[in-house]
Image 1 (cartoon, one colour):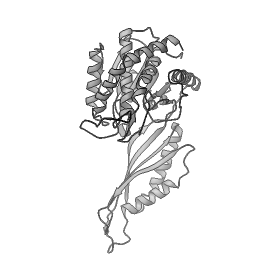
Image 2 (cartoon, helix red, strand yellow):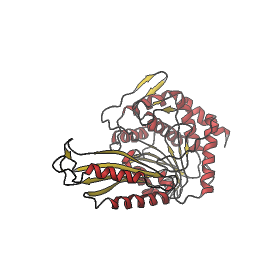
Image 3 (cartoon, helix red, strand yellow):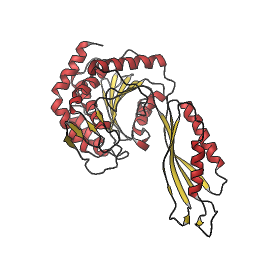
Length: 378
């Protein structure tokens, strides 16, 4: 780590302080539900154009992509932050300042990190430092919920054989995630003939059958480290009708792909046992987030140690390397070193009361820029 890089990054962050806050307040109000991130994408593309990056474009997945450096560079490092938030608002999001904090849905996840991505990228575009790889800036779509990491998948489909390293700016300081939490998600639907609760008593009920299925699913012995959850169940019509239809949302998670696949087999075997009990059962796979793939453990450890050292230098804190489900799942599943790094202090993740500490913004920008200017040896 070069001390002058940290000093350069800190000076730039100080100079950007007012602009950084104003940019955050503008972006934080723009609605960006998963699958409808167009307003933020257009804003980010136009902002990059105005800052001297006419090559910025919106791809078919809705990502804003901007390649800095040699456009023909064989090796690329991706620096990304996602544009979507978990809320379905289609009108401007509420933003307020109170108690020394900025409050808005999605302001930390991931709007503030997106601001730091944009401003750090501008420094590279203006100063054109000599780097061992081209830098691909990505404001990506579909990171949240059932977006299934759509934007990052598209980036790797387009550039995968050139990408050597991946950084996602997401979550809070001092996050430095290097382990992917993968997940499989299903909608299970049960239909029956139904009937009257008294006259047809004993006829199969879609709700009763789903409850039996849930009981059996909860009795499974999953692979070590695997979690599961029935997050929603609904159906039926009224208190005196045997339910003709019911459905549930079910997911399971693990950090490694073999465990996910083993749990998937257990799920389908359990489902099959309930297919002959008077109802029709269907399972629709809503999404897959892959777990860790064939990443070189030594290379990933060195890559993460480099990020952790910069986090320590910028914040004085030790990196939090807890597993998480983020855009980094895609490169990690494909054997490419990746870290998800928070660049803001905040709380209230995935609630309408999410907040960030605006005093942490310059530190986060210093960290984001230092990661770009001080590449690790791979």
